[in-house]
Length: 181
Ligand SMILES: [Zn+2]
Image 1 (tube, rainbow, N blue to C red):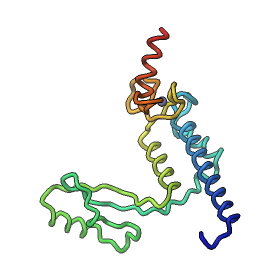
Image 2: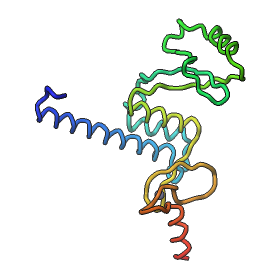
Image 3: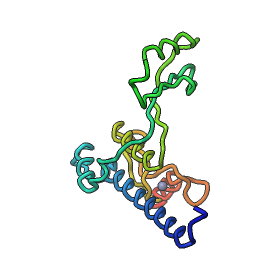
Image 4: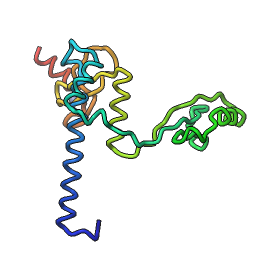
């Protein structure tokens, strides 16, 4: 970067700014379009995803470069030293690896899948696709106007973020509602 002129550095920064700005825009639109339960209520999540992809054709062409693997979890500990690399499945004898893990371990072992994320873009993509898969819904906070994840089916209008100080949107929102009524 240091061998570049000031103009080149500035244009690179501008490029990055626009890149991340657009990235944020696409994903907040994806959340809104596919997972916000206040709009498009007559469509299923799959229908909404297809509609979103029609608006953003490059979204389906996303190539995922991040590494994917399996790791044994024993006694609540994620043991990365025994992880099973799946970048080249042909080279890994999964059965043998699992036998070795069981032999060396005093506890019962379960397998967790994990990703070694390479970029912010991939993290957003993975997170969004996981939300779709798990049927997670989002809602727009009635106070701060930002999206939040609905943890359960209970009816709520505010998020848990702090709002202008220590108290959260939920606390302030409930009080405002009470005062209004
Ligand atoms: Zn809020």
